[in-house]
Image (cartoon, rainbow, N blue to C red; front, side, top):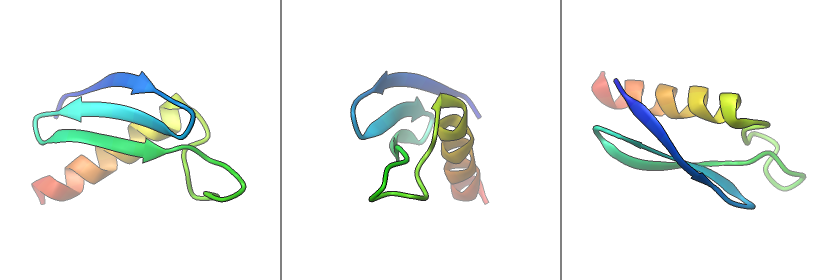
Length: 54
């Protein structure tokens, strides 16, 4: 599975893959399960795409 980091904004990290685009929410007071950094976001995105393959 290949994923590519596309962009980052105030609320999300955005990735592209063979399955399409996914936005991973950033950690905040309102989103305590969000990614704290780009590495966390990439791991979350990979997990989502791996779940699609199963």
